[in-house]
Length: 550
Image (cartoon, rainbow, N blue to C red; front, side, top):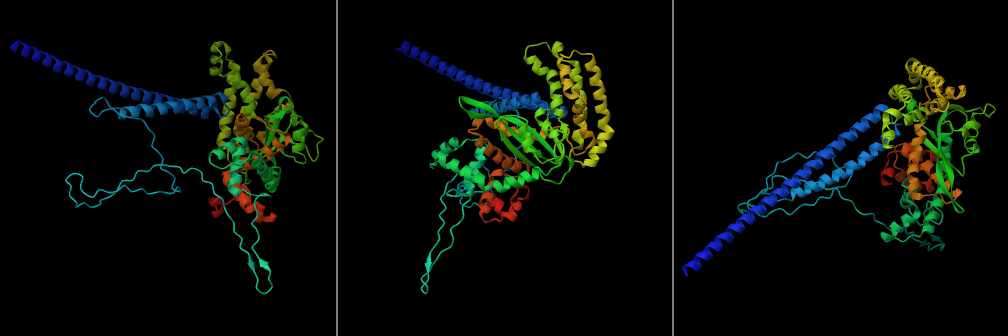
């Protein structure tokens, strides 16, 4: 019997030892997992820091070499997307690390996070007070006195709410003459109106400002419990275009009243029989801010089914001044010396000229193609880019100065650089074959005396900009929107899109919220006399109670 007890004791001791070893192993495993999670968080933070620094370096380089470096712009966008993913990974790893048991001790690390900006003051605050304790949580005494409070702010959003506004017009009858008296019915922004100005502004801005076609809008509205047919929305869009026509006319007159315009165009797919055809959307931008002009900026758009010369000639009929554009031959009709009332003066874009050299000196693009950089990079093209960049540096420093100050600085600093560049390009071209890509880039500027005169016209007029970037910026949203709406359904649809782009982009150029502006305009338009429509133009739209309500 004693031997049996001793064996049981031995087995019990062995079991206790095994359980102890298992517990120790489990603790070590938990600690190892905790350390691994912490290490992953540290690695994520390090990668986050590396990507952040690379992004800052890319942005600084872009500022140094100018905004026309397209490859740098794409690189920055790619880095920003990678940085967004790494930030999400870092948050996930740190959340896992925070969820570990508190008994695990590992080396701490400092998580790099930018300071969060306070929430906007204009947002309403909803105060939620947690029920206070009735007694001390330590000793249980009821003798507790409030000494302060801690407030935690949480940003929240209220889903969009729909409502029906019922306008009641009471009728009264006269006891003496038995006539009926009743207030007149309110005017709607559009005929057969059933939609309020805020709803109409939202539909217009979603379609033309955010590039959301009406069929996608109807699907989203249906999910929110409001069934609106596509044809009903389309009918209201057309009616709004008619109602807003006076504002388009005023913007057109304002743009064509400028002495200097930026012009450019971009492709627009147009639905046609058997597929699509390539149509064009033209823009003419008035922006006097670079030379401290007092006129507000505005943009005018036009649609055409092709790119023939007759379109810019028709768009600018009766206008004369300085046109900043690329070297597209379609503008030659307005440059004709026999044109009435006067020929338009051409001022060509240096960003286009620089781009042709930059493409031959883009080290990263050539490396991506698997070519040897040392053999493919053109030292002449690289030298041309550096020479042009010195001109851009001076131009950036005088942006916003008066036309007289810009002219004086250009005569003193820029003209010697431009003359030196001209002589250098002529000397280099003389030593090249005409089939050399660098020679073709040089010929873009020196093709004839008229071309070089258009490139250097900015030296004698402080109002002229060095680039046509203002027009390219005005077309940037359309280039992005093509992927959403795919094509224009008809020429009239293209004209309507150009009409609405003129209103929305002009509002954006004047730092005005297009949707709020459209809502306020549509609400006030029925009661506004034509003589006062100027007050509702984007640059005259004051910070009033009506704007806040819109």
